[in-house]
Length: 110
Length: 111
Image (tube, rainbow over all chains, first blue to last red; front, side):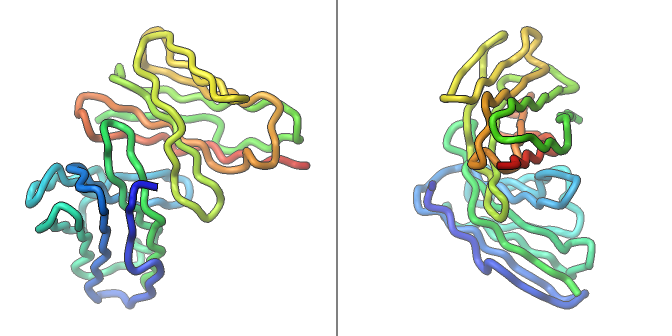
């Protein structure tokens, strides 16, 4: 694996609360990504980053924000969690064009 | 925006049978990639195809990229129980670093 960790691995939270998921990489890759995976939808890009403080939106960015203050960390924040954001969240890095994924965070919003 | 369609959504086979999943893009791709995700796991990169008409093999897996660079297929010969999982194609279009994933094909294998 490409030295990618995600924390927490599992989280249960209540509707309306803020939630932050962390992705950490050890190999200084420039590009990092956040995806969500839901049954029947495959992997959908939420946000991505192409450098420190450089981020852009993906196809399902509403309700999510990101920050990247250091090369190794990419944070995904749900400002006010909703039940529709219950999902498995994967972080990924790119070494060229191919991507390598972290182990995922299973988030349940009750 | 770019769309990548993948069929079938599910495939159940007997061990030893062959399996194929197909991927079609709404736009011409720079390259296409294939990933495998085991149940409960994360997607793992398998291979990348770049050239028109390219064919690559990994043991029992054969990957093809169409002449128009808009479609691709993954064929597994003589499936084994270790092949179980979801296979995703992902296309790289105009952006060098943004992939568009198909919805995947879930393969189950009956021993």
